[in-house]
Image (tube, rainbow over the protein chains, first blue to last red):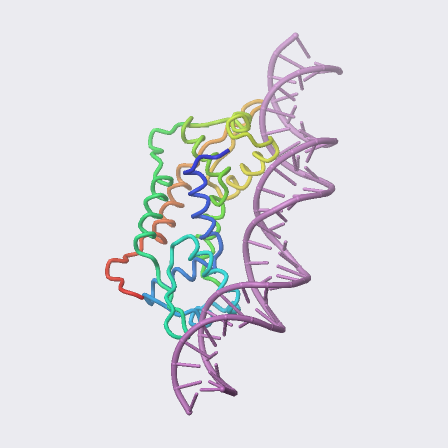
Length: 102
Length: 102
DNA sequence: TCGTTTAATAGCAATATTACGATATAATGA
DNA sequence: TCATTATATCGTAATATTGCTATTAAACGA
């Protein structure tokens, strides 16, 4: 019913469609890498809720989690973040200069 | 609980978080402007459903609807699209070159 | 080994989203 | 004026999302 690109854009943006996940990404970026518990502190949602949001971002491939003993260290996946950005730019970069509509 | 920027990014991306709305934007771009009925034809969802998706995009300011007799002509709002892109780029353009994590 | 710490999962309630048929509204043309 | 066309809105069912508590699992240290 929709093109692969349309589904892809929807899948990506859906992941960003909740402020908690935006906050997670921004915190991971700020501190380079981060264990789950810090995010619970930082963001103020319960541990299972944060864990669930991390799962969604991980499933999309935007972040990775590495087990470090009892902790899990999360960080942004450089390659996939780049690929995502390419897809998003393809969609967002519309040339509207010659547009003349109602 | 979240920053204004985080809520803003979530609000924008939520609008793109459904393939029908991505398809609407792409069709509006392709044909420059478009009346609602054409989108119903093009996308294949019912007229009320398309109308609802249009409403969400309009509410966010990304598209405008101009009444043209019995029809409504929709088009992408150039200024707001640009503003949205600036916000998105601020969020997406992370410098990950020096990143070295787990 | 056993308790502690950390994260994931299960289960569930509240809310939001999506889609549709039915109906209302608005504008035009006969 | 009245039928027609085009869109918006209402009401509603099905599904998805969000967030929590309780529990499980995994790893380490005493």
